[in-house]
Amino acid sequence: MRTAVVHAAAGSLLFTALAVAPTGSATAAPAATTPAAVATPDAPGAAELRGTAVAAARAAAEGIEFGACPDAQDLSGTIECGTVTVPLDYAHPHGRQIELAVSRVRATGKDPDNDKRKVPRQGALVHNPGGPGADGTYFPLLGLLPGWKRIAGAYDLVGYAPRGVGRSAPLSCEDPEKSVQGPTRAPAHPSESYKRERIARAEAYARGCAERAGGALRHYHSLNNARDLDVLRAALKEPRLTFMGASYGTYFGALYATMFPSHVRRMVFDSAVHPDPEQIWYRNNLDQSAAFEDRWADFRTWAARHHDVYGLGDTPAKVHRSYEKASARLAREPAGGKVGPGQLQSAFLQTGYYDDHWPHRAHALSAYLKGDPGPLIEQAEPQPEAAVETENSRAVYVAVECNDAPWPTDWAVWDRDNTRLARRAPFETWANVWTNLPCAFWPAPRQQPLDVRTGAGELPPTLILAAERDAATPYGGALELHRRLAGSALVTERDTGTHGVAGGSNACVNGHLEAYLLTGRVPGRRASCAPRPEPEPRAEPGPEPRTETEPEPRPAA
Image (cartoon, rainbow, N blue to C red; front, side):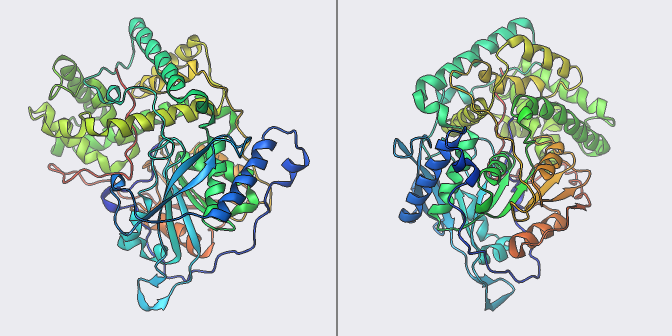
C-alpha cells in the first residue's frame, strides 16, 4: 500500500501556533516489558520482546553521540546527526547489529512571541513520514520555519531513517537505473501478454531482493520498525515516547502503542492506515485503488470548473478525454523521449495525494495539448540522479509489505480481484498491482499482523487526524484506528482529500494538533474541521509544490 508522507508544499508543514503555555513532560519511567508477554515466555513474539528490552537497556546506557551530519545528507548546519544501534533480529539481541541514522535539532527553549519568556523543554518529538521507505532525517529542518517556532521551543525535533532506508542498512533489489527508465506504458486494461510480462518482472524483483539481502531480508518489517522505535526512545533518554507518524508511520506507531502502551507519552496519527489484520496489506491496496478513482474524479471536476483557464473541458468527462488524448499521443511519441503514458500516470497520481498539485498538473496537461511539452517534461520525466534513492525506497516498501502479512500466491486471485475493480476504478488499479506483485512470489517468511488494540486506561490520550476523501489512506482506516485505541480523539477535515493534514493550510486542524502536543489536550472523542479552500487556478503556476519526500511513483511498463 504505497502511502505518501506528511505534506510540506511551499513550506506548509508547520503548525499554527496557539496561545497556550506548554506543560512539563511526564517523567515516570515505563515498565521495561509488557507483563503479559513475560508471563508467557513461549508466546509468539516473547523472545523478540525480551530482545527489545535488552536492546533498549543497551541503547539507554550508550545514548546517541550527535555531531556534524554527513555531507551526503545535504542537511542544514543547525542539525546534529548520529546513529542508534539495533539488533537485526530481536530474538537474538546480541547477534548482528545494524545502525539507524538519526537527526536532531535541540529545543530552543524560546517563546517566539516573547523573547524574554523561557519555554520548558518537553523532550523529543520523533517523527516518521511514512512510506514504507521514506527517510525522515530531514524532519528537523522544519524547526527553522516560523510556524514551527513554538513547537521547536518545547521539543527536540528528531527524525530518523528506518531500517533499510538511506544510511540505515540500506536495501536494494535491482540495478537502480531500472527504476528511472522511460518512457513506459500504463494500460488501464492490460492484455494477457502484458500481464505475463509484469508477472515475470515481479518474480525477478522478488528474487533480486533475496539475492541482494540474503537472510537479512526477513527482518525488514513493521513489527521490527516498532521495536526499533522503542530502542530509539531509550537512546534519546526519553522515559516515554512522543511520536508523530504520517501515513504508513501511523501503522507501526499503532503497533508500538499496542506492544508498549506504558512507554507512550503522546502520539499523533496523521492519515491513518487501516490496522485490521485482515486488511494488511492486500485488501488495503484494493481499497486504496478504489479511493484514488474518487480523488481522480475530484481533480477532473475541479479542472472542468476552470475550463476558462486550462481549456481541458467543461465537464469531468471532457477533462478525462483530454487526459486520454495526451496519453495516446505520448504512446506514439514520448515527450522529450522519456515521458510516456506511464510517466503521465505517475505524475497525475499525485493529484490524488495533494490538492496543491492540481494547478501544476492542469497547466502541464493544457500546455502539452497546445503544443508545449516543457511543463509536462519538467513534472514527469524520470530523474536519473535520484535512481539510488528511488530504488532504495521501493525495495524497503516491497520488503516491509511483503514480510508483514500473508499475500495471495495464486495470480488468478490477483487477476480476478483487480480485473473486477478496474471496471469501476481504472485509474490506479493495475499500477498498484504491479507495485505489490512481488509479494506473490516472496521468498522470505511472513509475519502474522498484530491485532492493534488497547483497552481503557492502557494509553494516555492519542490524536488521530484524517481527511474524509484521503485516497492513499482511506478514511475508514482512521475510524477503525479510533475504535481500536481506547481514549483516542479523531479530528476530521471534512470534504477534502489531501493526504497528510498536519501542518497544512487548515488552521482548525493545526490548532487541535498544537493543543495536543503542547498541553496534552484533546477535543473529546471526535471533532471536525471545515474543508480547506480549493486551490486557485493559475494559467502560469509558480514553482511546483514539494513534499518532504514525494510519494514514490508506481512503476509502469
